[in-house]
Image (tube, rainbow over all chains, first blue to last red; front, side, top):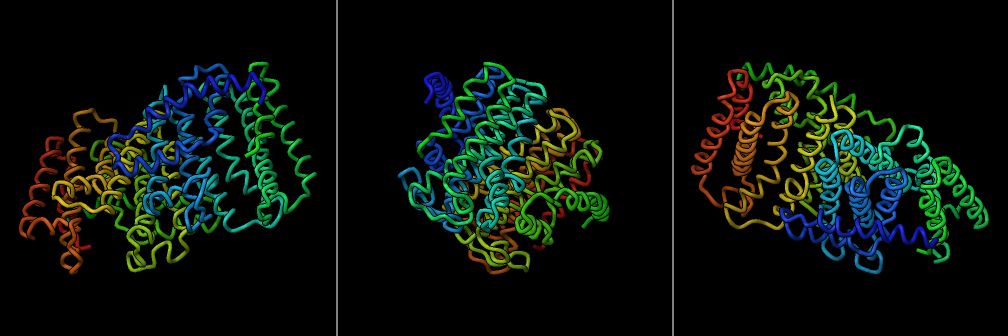
Length: 279
Length: 279
């Protein structure tokens, strides 16, 4: 990883992790529910979405503290989506990040309810902690539209149904994974109160980065000899074509935000980080 | 039902139902997902929560149209909670309101995702349709806190775990059923921009009404010879005691809002309606 990015990430995560711990104490929740939600929230995830939210906020001139509620909210939503995706009636996964999944460690009802509570809490957190009502409204709308039926949940439905064409796969992935990644970046820009043109640039960056993320995921899975069904890019393209395609998305992401000036360099290095991550 | 209340309900529902139909077209959702969500949303429910939201808004002087997004949002959240509660790992119910439950009519994954999408959409709807950012923030917070880990979801966890004392049962029911009923009333008052003292009165009314609702539910279930486990008031009290207790909650609800003036009379008649409903 680029050393400047590494140091930026270390710095923003040094603020994010204690904040996340603080806002997830949940003393008024039933203890098992809070425990199950935290079990999945603190399980060694890479914090890609909150990192993007905070780097984007900082690059556009916001104080990090302004963007912390947003960064935490997207991580809560991401975590809920993993818990529900792992359920027996969905992907039926017993392990995630080398540990039992939430419904294996607890039980199915608790996992469903922990996901529900995390999703709900993301909106409570935004409405409680946003620096103004306008921020609260913008963030709520951005998060709800990215993660609902026309975004992440819709993508999960399409994933389960299975896709047959490359075009349908791209559209499914842009909803299932891309929408929340894009929203993370855009919500960071919102914290800085940037103009609409800059927001549109962040949006194009986030959208390209989301697809790039998924292309890399499929390459990693291919190296691990995973099944290549219609929901993998490798079912529709050769490995070389996927690598070329990924290069094009990287260029697209970079060229979208380069005009915003040198302060976006952490976001530009992030493209490289996402491209070359190994898991 | 009191004729004046009947005519008020007919009038507000004549605005609510077309509005709900309009905001649940969801053209950008996968069609099965939208179909499953609407299947549960339009299944002959009594619309208790949106009725309360709209009657409360109107009683406090708001235009009905101002409160429609709030009324729809609480009904979306209520519907999601029923879908998830019916799942095999929770109450494992095959029928609701004389029709197959969502996971029986569709499948379990679709039911979980339809619930997730309804919950998410309630916040999208509020943020998109609130008359101002301040309304959006207040409603989001009210809804998220009533329906999350310290509210409805927390109550569902306690319901599954089972409660042993009357005190624990009351607390569980105030979370599981009461919190959203209370929030529905309070959110109506928010639409009218009422002062804090009036909000506190609406809150006490809503809280008492929520408990009264559950006491009646348990009496109805008892008449149907349902099991009387620790989660029923009839496990802890005789039928006569439950009836007396219900009378006290009815008085409490009425005396909380009577000082607000004659315009709250539909809310006062609503207490009678909830008390004497038969299913």
